[in-house]
Amino acid sequence: MTPWPQVYDPLGGHPLLSALLAAVPVVALLASLAWFKLRAPVAAAIGLGSALLLAVLILRMPWSAAVASAGFGAAYGLFPIGWIVLNVLFLYQLAQGRGLFDVLRRNIAALTDDRRLQLLLIAFSFGAFVEGAAGFGTPVAVTGGLLIALGFAPLEASALSLIANTAPVAFGALGTPIIALQGVTGLDLHQLSAQVGRQLPWFSLIVPFWLIVAYSGFRGLKDIWPAVLVAGVTFAVPQYLMATLHGPWLVDIVAAISSITGLTLFLRVWRPKGAAPRAVAPGMAEPNPGPVKAWLPWLVLSVLVFAWGIPAVKNALNGVSAPKWPVPMLHNLVERTPPVVMAATPEPALFTFNWLSATGSAILLSALVTAVILRYRPGEAVRAYFTTLKLVRVSLLTISLMMALGYLTRYSGLDAILGLAFARTGAFYPFFGTMLGWLGVALTGSDTSSNVLFGSLQRITAEQLGLNPTLMAAANSSGGVMGKMIDAQSIVVAGVVTRYEGKEGEILRYVFFHSIALAALVGLLVTWQAR
Image (cartoon, rainbow, N blue to C red; front, side):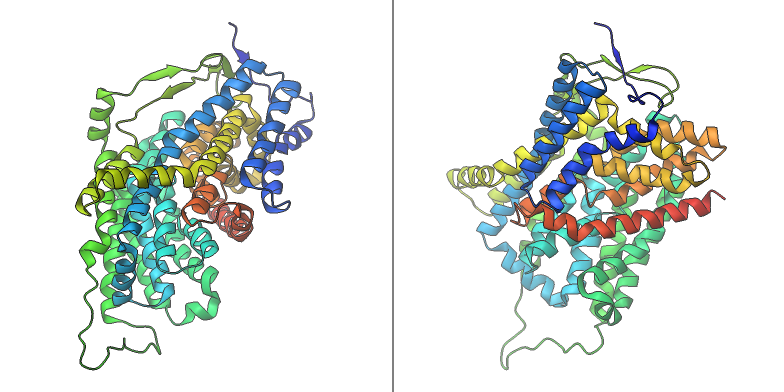
């Protein structure tokens, strides 16, 4: 069968109109969620339906390839993304069933009973560690559940977890986004890592302050700014040093451990101005909150997920079982064409069922180990798993529909039409090229996917405009991290974990301004660096 070449100006000489047309599915999805307040599965179905119509009727994509790409995305939504969500929530159910969240609440309160500092420690510092170890939605799922356990309202827990999960994303999952970016651009891996390392540490300083202001306003920041500064500096400095001197692999892990340690030690010797010492009833000792027991599920999770992400371990597990199946009617039957790529290139479509090396499988093993330690009976654990499956069934459908839309956008070339519109901004390209990375993550839900989609375009456009291609490729990843908080996949995951299903539009409205504003700041930084 002859490959179908993507068409980037379907209206013939009207690139702006073509770009506006390509934006219809995204606008339909976001408007359905945020303004018409439709449930997420319905909004996703509307976006997917409009994309299918555009792909087949306007772009002349073969209907078989269009349906196959949507099916490919839907399958990816269930595995590995849905597999992560399901098993994180299973772990959450097990911990909740043994009352560990009550113990955890007392344990954190023993360190600080200030909600702002708890937010800083969990959402920013600990969330960055989970991002570095696993990525792909795991940190939002973990930190959202922990914030709910600490008494945060569902909307706050969802939205604040999303805002916090930004600065670490480019180095998430042991550097996967940067490694993928190197693969599609052919640029030097260490130079890419170093360039991102000269961009994101500034935002590792900004985001903790931004997070607290989003939660409690500037007045809430006034009394705790020293702790916020400690959390940011102890993350940003190791992030810069690891990214520029070592490479992308352990950046988040080292920076997060540094931030957790630095903030914890600081809180042992410092208290917010005006904070009263914790009261203990006369004649009673300070209660022992059982720190090891409280953190047990998350310690097991962190160790196993980190081990699963080590390249040698992942490769060994993939060697045992990681079948790859070509997607019928799609594999190598769609071609990316210039100027998105140097020469016409067939797009592979291989569904990899790496069930053993998948992050979700490491999380499932963490849950099973936790179940044994907490003395769950086999039947009791099985019932908890089926209860979890029942809770997330609608959300798994939503994630599948969202990913179906993302994959159809990619294989039909709708994403490239939008990207080329950004590339036509000439002297303003450093800013808009950064925003292109933001758009890519907002569409696909992944900084890795955004880098794969637009990395080559960034290099080609930069070379045509006389810009540093390494700078613009890195800007794609750095700008992309700010799109993570508004991508549909992350919003759905946050809603599921915090039991805020059906309110995804509220979450989107909460975080949208923060996403745009932070992405614009990254764009301004890149514009300055491009001078």
